[in-house]
Structure formats: C-alpha cells, structure tokens
Image (tube, rainbow, N blue to C red):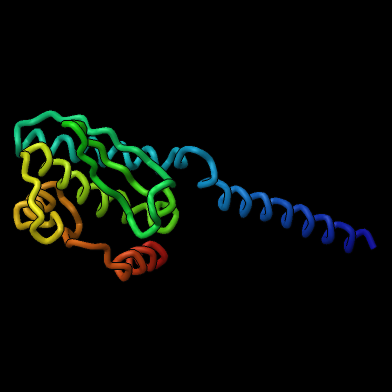
Length: 163
C-alpha cells in the first residue's frame, strides 16, 4: 500500500511540474515583450547587421526595431519610411512559429528595405525587391533574399532544429 501511495505521489508531482512547464511555454508569448532569450538573439543579430553596414557602406545607422502583434499575420515584418524616419516592425506572433527564421531571414530582409530608404531608392520594381535591394540583402547576410516568405523554409527550419 505504501508503494502504491509513493508511486501515486510521484505521478501527481511530475504531472504538476509538466503542467507548469507547458503553461509557461504557452504563455511566454502572451506578454508585452518577447522572451529574454529571443530578445538577446535579436539584439546580437541587429548588432551584427549594423556592423556589416559600417563595413560595407561606411554608415553607422540606428533603426528602431519594434516588435508588434498588431500587424496582420500574413506579414512577417516591414520597414516603414515616414518623414525621413525609418523603423522596422517585426510580427511578434511569427516569432512563436520560428524565431530562427524571423532573426536570420526576416530581419536582414527588412534592413535591406531600410537601406533602400536611406539611399532614397523608392523603386516599385518587383514590389520593392529590386536587384539592388537583393544585393543589399545578401551583403547583410540574409539567408534568402527573395521577394516573399516561403512557408516551406519555416517548416524546414523547424525540422532542422528537431533533427
């Protein structure tokens, strides 16, 4: 009887710990900010991109990066230009799907748009994804500098982190 009680107690304790862990993981994107570990990775990538811009363009720029859950879910991010003010907005909800994609694909993509704004190149060619934009994106070490998101890339990114 004591053995059954001990096993029952262990199962209950493990279940409570597991429930807490699952609840924490589900709620870490509910707050105002991204989880600290993602914020840190994002800051490191931002620093790296800014360093590349200094090396390749001899410009030290500081573009605000805003994480928002108020942009449409079909957008992963966007670069905004208004009265000579440039900002990059990243979709917070998309970080939950694939933080690696957001940091290594989307951030350089949006920085390339921001650089086009700085160069006053407001081309509509290929919806802003001209050859010049693509070259900038590649120089900023964008993983893929395509016009739109390929959802297969996200799935493959997730599979790559599993295996």
